[in-house]
Image 1 (spheres, helix red, strand yellow):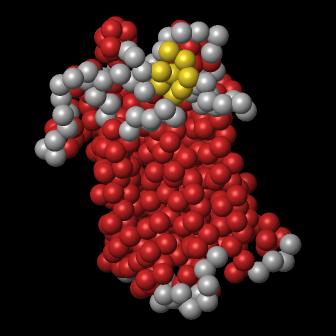
Image 2: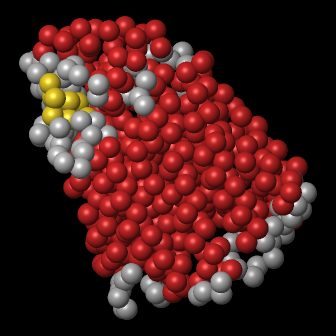
Image 3: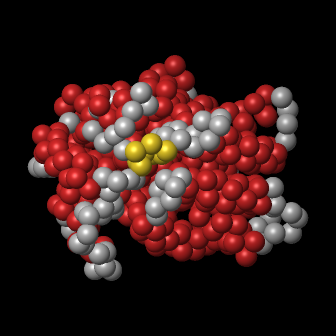
Length: 475
């Protein structure tokens, strides 16, 4: 019996399949850390590109990149090939990402803003293709309410390993006496080589079924607004925006807070950040497990409350005390790992609800919208936090000794912003209706209708011989 058929009968995806499918999370998470933390500094410090030009380049690219996601999601949902719907996009996205990574992380001498903008666009296009195809494929791979929480937890946990690998590169290079300027090139080669391996593993080992469509609803431009205004999805979008702004705010002020307020060195603060990220390897699957017991929206409220209380406790860390500092950082990372796990799993439930009503697959488009909220938050988090710092009298320039009042204002900015946004994100889940019982009824109706219309094949995991295509439901 095939794994796909077995999963459909038991409602639980085999762990080996889930782990193989999660491989795409490795390069996606590695790119997120490398591009947001290390690449801008590399262009400004080591390549001599003006800091303002670097910031402008990243902002311009983000503004161009955001609407592209909607087009990609819509196109993915329309795709029907013998190799599947999302599998073929994974195959297309990997080389695009690799090209962007190679030219961005190993640039020639004398590059400027135009070079940076162009290859950032290429890199973000490849990253968007891989990200959207991955999460939309996950929605179809695990169709049942609880198994979705489990799968998205595994995907996030595996992604932590990719992020941690990038963080380890400068630590290892420093230990062996390598130049700091070589960190970005090493990261680039790591991601460049990791991407095809991860994509090949996913394509080789993961089954895919294209859901049957019924005649009727044709997507129109105004339907974007209708999707956004759906009560369940509107809550998810607003929550996702808040849950991205909160940690984004924290990240932008992180080094300032831990060096000037808590008395850590930059190296110590980096180690604490690694603890925060690595905590997600434990937190993501366990928060997914919690969602199977109390429902996804309630688990989101638990995660946001725990995260906010933990952030407040950071003020109790003694100056420069690493032994104490790792505790709240691990706990905060544990809860933060649940944010994307839960909102992405809930988006998959909404995709089922929409497909039941409209007879068409909209998972790619829905995920494009949630990814857009994350990108909007990322585009504005740095500008917003630095604006606040400037207004409260904190001076970020290297070598400046800030007054106690300015440091106190930094502490307030660091804590109040994330706590407010994250708690708002949790509050969005109050009264959320699309729970396990409602979703079970949706899946029952979908399964009954699919049995009548289903002529689509299950594209099994690709073996060493060839892709095996079997009629849906046949073992």
